[in-house]
Image 1: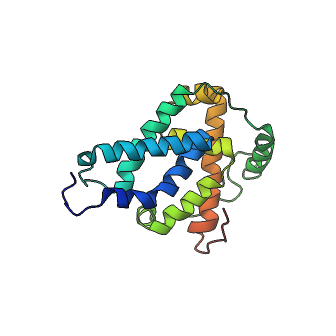
Image 2: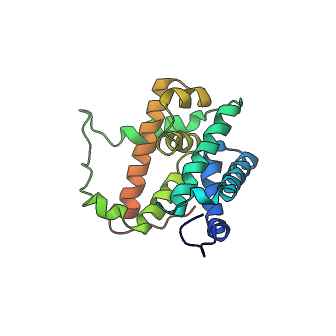
Image 3: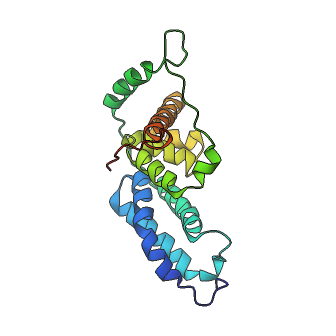
Length: 196
């Protein structure tokens, strides 16, 4: 059991469920599979409450287990994913506008100050989550597979039925969109209104 005998593990898990389901939906693109993965995660935690020794935050612990459940589901599924080509054309045009003919930035990225201090602020993560949620579905999914689930490129390509070069282009686009969104809504000092 956790070191605090009064710790209500089930009660502490309940408010985390909406974020867990949203994270699972982004990866699995199937509401039922997402619900199943979250339910399996919660059941696994409640079946072995002693495994959570409160060495990390409960949310960190739960997401670590959920990642494994999502990876299991991704590996078990044999569905095909169709990539949207409309986004690709719009993205290329938007990214081309960021650079001059010589390949340099048209406008140098501004200094973001001390990124470590920003990471400590909860509001930063809320803005980051909204920015990730605003990514096009397949770009967001590939980004989360790589950065959160820590899947290898080969696994992502197999799951998404894309080439390695396409995967890297989509990861680059995700990072560029996140950079732009964070610049507008966090680092500019004047947050823009973000709607989900």
